Image (cartoon, rainbow, N blue to C red):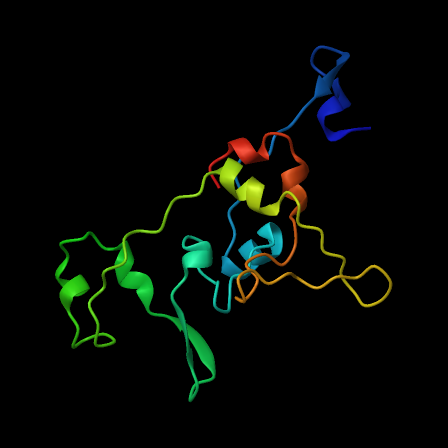
Length: 153
């Protein structure tokens, strides 16, 4: 049975069966679950789910962590924090807001992604793009839903 065929359910009030169909249109999760559910990297150099491949990740060698210093780009252009060099990393923030990606654009990024997990015959590693860390770990099963690319991702 396909998911869109529905399921026959008994209606006790009317004493008859009917076809029940359901649609998943929203998910709410924390950041680690977002990575597991969507397949997108939520840590490392491409860890910002809004900026995607335009993330400003910097490696701090003493802390051994990646930090995201480009968060001031989400402020409006005339905000005083954008010009404040002393309190931040010694630079003005000149980057504009990240480009919004709708469901069709994100689907175009993941539609050809085929990753076989585990070691052995046929296994492939996550491909690197432009010598950068991979942005996607896997293709989510939610992309098999025909309406998923039409939702705001």
